[in-house]
Amino acid sequence: MLTEERNRILTQVGAGTPFGELLRRYWYPVAFSSDLLDFPIRKARLLGQDLVVFRLDDGTFGLVDEQCPHRRASLAYGVTEPEGIRCGYHGWLFAPDGRCLEQPAEPADSTFKDRITTGGYPCREMGGLVWGYLGPAPAPELPGYGIFEWTDVWRDVGHATLPVNFFQIMENAVDPTHVEWLHGRYANFIRTRKGLPSALTFTRKHTKIAFDPFEYGIIKRRLYEGQTEDADDWKVGHPLLFPAMMYVGGGAHIQMQIRVPIDDTTTWFILYSTHKPTGIDLPTQDRFPNYDVPYLDEYGQHIVDYVEGQDIMAWVTQGGTPDRTKEHLGKSDAGVILLRKMTFENIDLVARGEDPLGVVRDPVVARAIDLPVEKNKFGGGAAFEWEFLTAASTRYSPQFDRLKELYDGARLAREALEPAGG
Image 1 (cartoon, rainbow, N blue to C red):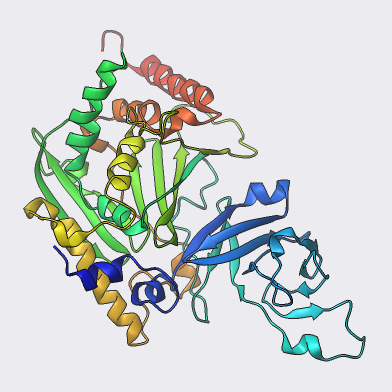
Image 2 (cartoon, one colour):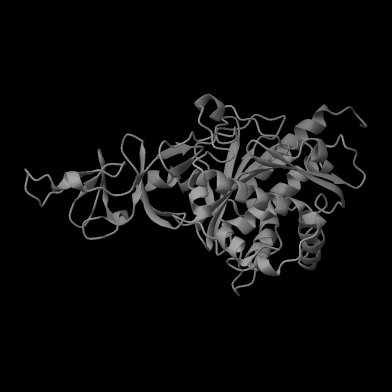
């Protein structure tokens, strides 16, 4: 368990808090770039700050504080200009870096605008997401992690805004044994009562777990009953990317889960999936969908017959900011304990003026990060790919049926290559 003070540190993400200052050393998604094609201005909220993200005609993006410094009206109801964003109330114009460029109602020879700025923050597009950085200059590189820069995959992105602190979601990323219980035993308890097929690849019993710190976070490894240590689940594993992402999946379906800390009690949970079924040519995907993943039914009860819905139930029912002073951790919680230790160590690094774990300054390195992930997840092969597709949040995707067709096509192509009787 943690002391009340240390638990409070882990749940505060605002400016000036120890954890908030650490978190400001990293980039986070603030919008989908396709949404800004439909309309060029959107509200955003990140690390307790109200922001506006906008797209200019030349394709560049800006991120500024929401309230205009003139009379505090929202810039989310402004106008984009070639130079930046103009407040809809009195027309003050701001560059993406926060400089005031024009004040139409002030005298033409006034220098008043030169003394006015608003918060302007680095903003980049990558992988169909718009990313923002709220920390001190100079901003670090925005790591591609491979998945955000792949060009030969189909993308599919579900998301939900959850009433919880982001850190309890991250603790789940280093808690492997919950899979056989939450996504196995509990899932089948629910699914069979709804007439749904049982989850098979999620039910295997863990015999050993391990957690290895590395330069971007923690590699999580597991060994299942009946597996040898040559199994991908043990030999390869997959990473928690400090402080707010997890890289997971297997075979043709790889996913980056991003847990964006909106404020102390709210998280934007993004399931950024890529699909590359083997044996078929993927058709061109001009624009990938982003869609809401529901987690409550019409009665306000958690929807728990799919994988992420089960996770969300566990996170949300802990409370908006869980009271870790009342926990009773065991040996199976070694990953949670390691993550907390790593977090406090990096809070100390930032307090000393040093870069924390995973901050990349070299642009060449940022484009060439090769993350490990299991190919034969849970020893399930194609069966895991199918369950990860059909028993998880992708069922809410507008292209769900098309994805199933692609995986079916890949299966038929494999079967056609198998020897007769084989």
